Image 1 (cartoon, rainbow, N blue to C red):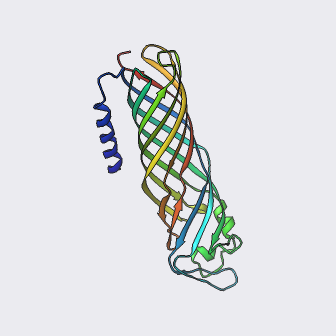
Image 2 (cartoon, rainbow, N blue to C red):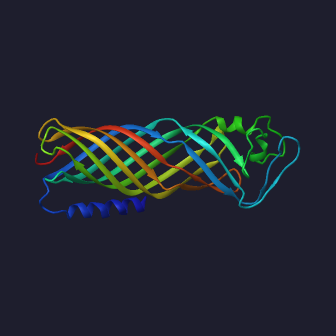
Image 3 (cartoon, rainbow, N blue to C red):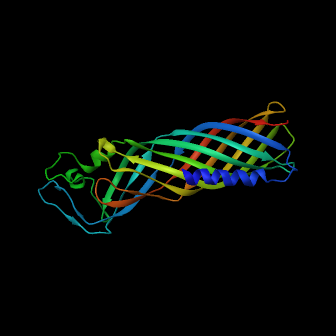
Length: 258
């Protein structure tokens, strides 16, 4: 979070130093739906011995063995606030603080060493010496957990038809996101970790000027970070989790000195 705060202060300094030719400052906020993309999680293990495979046997897993699974997410929440400055030539610059979340729906297609292990007794990955009477696939199908992100972006926009009441726009931004991931299907703690990563977004939307000072807007944003590398709490290893979002939001802005 200190990295996010430092990025915010640095970006705000850039905007404060913008030329005096700017038409004016604005503040805005939005709320919307986060359609979190599915994640193809992949990683490698440290050396460990499995629990009971269901037939009384165990398996020694070598360090560096690949494993993974797919995770599907429910739609979640997206909120953001932005402060920026508008220029007479249609250019806008802003600093945005954004928060998103999405609950896990289900996990599927668990693999270890390149092969599926969904039909094995769950004791194999839980480390239990006795069979649990339920398969790995059944355990992970119960989607508990979530992914949350708090991000800071420096955004640039171009407003088409500047000066008119209706103004379509496009934009893009770069920044950092503090991402936390929890995977605990069937109440079994697998992942509870996070990482701060480089983030970027692409935007398209339209603004409608309600008064000289108030405007409303609708916006689509594609937002992504580098893969989030987390530690596995169930058996030794790390896991890379994809973090890509499609965000649909509505909001309002207030223009100072409109």
